[in-house]
Image 1 (cartoon, one colour):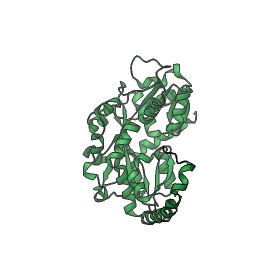
Image 2 (cartoon, rainbow, N blue to C red; image 1 turned 60 degrees about the vertical axis):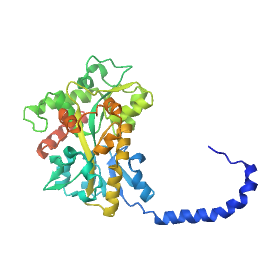
Image 3 (cartoon, rainbow, N blue to C red; image 1 turned 180 degrees about the horizontal axis):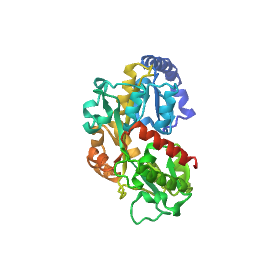
Image 4 (cartoon, helix red, strand yellow; image 1 turned 180 degrees about the vertical axis):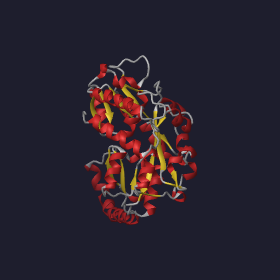
Length: 364
C-alpha cells in the first residue's frame, strides 16, 4: 500500500484542488448511468457470496435484496403465506409442487445467455420441463454426505451408518432439510425405490428416523452453524455439504467428507425459478440469472464451494485435479444417476413422510 505523507501535500495540493471537481463529476456520471437494483432473491442461507454475481453488481452497483430459508419446505410455506420475491432457489424435487401451487412462471430460454452451454441432462431433466415449458434454470449440483473429524473419528469403511452409531450419541448434527433426511433414512433402511414406497417401507424408514434423531445434538439451520460446532469439537459427525468441507479444511480443521459411501451419495440439483410474485423488471431478473450462470461465477462455485456448476464452460475452467478432489471429475449425469438422487415424489407420500419426520423430530 502506498502511504501519502504530510510532506507530499504542499506539492500536490493545487493539483488536487483542480482534480477533485472532475473526479466528483465522473463519479456522479457513473452513478447516474448505473441501473438501480430492485431484485429480491429468496434463497438458502449462505448463498449471498459476492463472487457469484459480479456481472450483476457491475451493472446495478449493489443488490440484490436477500431473504433466506433453511430449506425449500420453509421457503414454500412462506411463499404460500404471501411472502413475495422475484427469484427463488428451489431444487429439482420442488419444481412440480411449486408450479402446481401457482408460485412459478415459466423460464424464457431465449433470455438465458448460457442456455446452449448448460449441460443438457441437467437443463432438460424431466422434472424441470412440465407442460412443454422449462420451470427452473439449473445452477448447482452435487452431493450431500457425512462430514467427520478425522482426529476424533476412526472409520474402517465409508458408510452413513456412522450417523446412527450409539458411539456418537450427542456428537451428531443434521440439517433442517426434510428431503435430505428422508432420502438418508430411506437409504439406511435399505429401500430400493425411495421415491415410490410400498406400505411396508414406512415402518423401516421411521425406525431409522428415530435412530438418527436419538443421536443428534442439534439440527443445524445454516452451514455456518454446522461449521462452528464442527470446528469447536461440539460435534464430530454431521450430514453436510461440500462447501462446509471446503470451509473447514481452509480453516485448518481436520475433517473429511465421504465421497464413496457404500450406500452411494445422496445427489441433488438446484437452480433459479422466476416467481409469479416478481415485480422486478424481466431484464433485471435475467441479468441476475446470467451473472450466476457466467463461467467465472461457476468456477468460483466449484473451487470455493465444492459444488458442480450447470455451465459446461465453467467446469472447463477448473483444473482436473481440483474436480477429482471433490469427486466431480466424471460426467455430471452419471454422477447424479449413480447416487441416490433427490427427485420428486407423490404429494401423498411426501405428506405422510413429512408428518412422520415432524413427530420424530419433536421427540414423539
